[in-house]
Image (tube, rainbow, N blue to C red; front, top):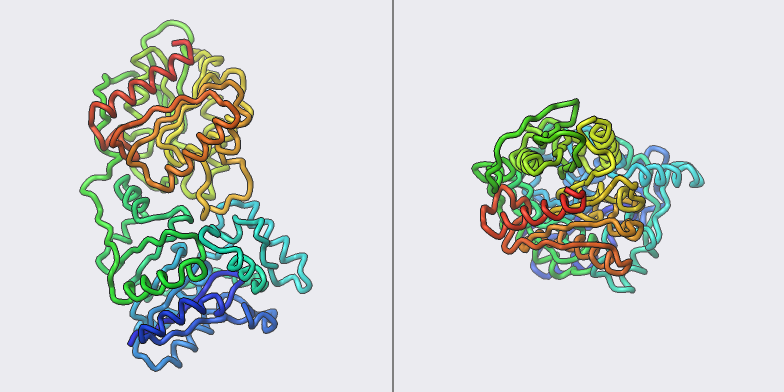
Length: 500
């Protein structure tokens, strides 16, 4: 008989698991839905010392009381932090850890420090300051989806129930760092991905193919993955399906990730382009044409997040070297930049790097500062928002290739600063060239469609170039004639808008 310990996310308690727990018990499993100290129906027990360590100790005591020799620990959202802490102290009692639409916290990580949007973090801290004791965060309303996560799949009754039973979250549970000895690293794990939150097995495999080093630890026969086509609260939206997946996870089932022999982004560029002179200035490379007098420039903005220690860095990836050389061969200056988008919390810093690269290029005497295009790729697509919302007169075109054009729901962005879909209404008559691939990751394809719908509504000048049977990162993966034609067409279009 399998014993499950179910730990839910912020503002909730054991009540949230009721339907899923019933289904698990019907299968013969032993189930322990947990209400942590000061949470859920135990909200009045929160004291000045209620912190992450309190919740870890709650789970350690429960593990010690369970008769089953081993238990399956399920951590949803915030719940994965105390789950990992408790499993690290009782690794011999843990059969498996299940990450249910949860992050991958490491030793020293505090929940608030992992939030990608600083404004959300500040808002939560302010709420704690405004509480009666200064130690608890009031639960959000349904009008704050960046705090609840995706509510996709929830009925009106379930939404009302979630808010009605929500309890304040003790602040110290979110600010105290998680401390791990490393013992938990040997415990088998499973990941249940709620696709409406913006993550799926397909996305993980694409990132792995693109060489994302942080996913290498997940290429392990002890790690299995499952998709659930729902939002962040599957125990309320699809409790039966969740129970079935939990039983399969406990049995060691699940999709296994396989690392490619060579990261896709390090494959050769799909076009043969001759070498061009290249100058490096700080984070910026200039690919120079054979031309007299100032020439138009195309600034290529890579995607991400890209780990800070990644080698080679994006401006030396074959695709960006290829694009830079290609436009230089056609008479424009190709500009590539290593911006510092190392985490989803780094978009503000990356935006500053891109703006600095643009100014550096425009100030170069070989560049016509009044004829500049910005070309964004993948996760870098969000950086186009500020340029779309108020385009300067020298910006002649914005291009985006397999771009992310709206924040993923689980990224927790509270405003539209990095939402091109919201910003496009300010683009006016600025030409926009979007290249999309037929075999795009569903989560990213959804953001592109959201953007194109918004663009149609405001009558923005958008040209769409499709790549039949193309994949994300197709320039170094799909060496097909349609893929080559798509690159050539996109470059011709962008240069045409620059008057070159």
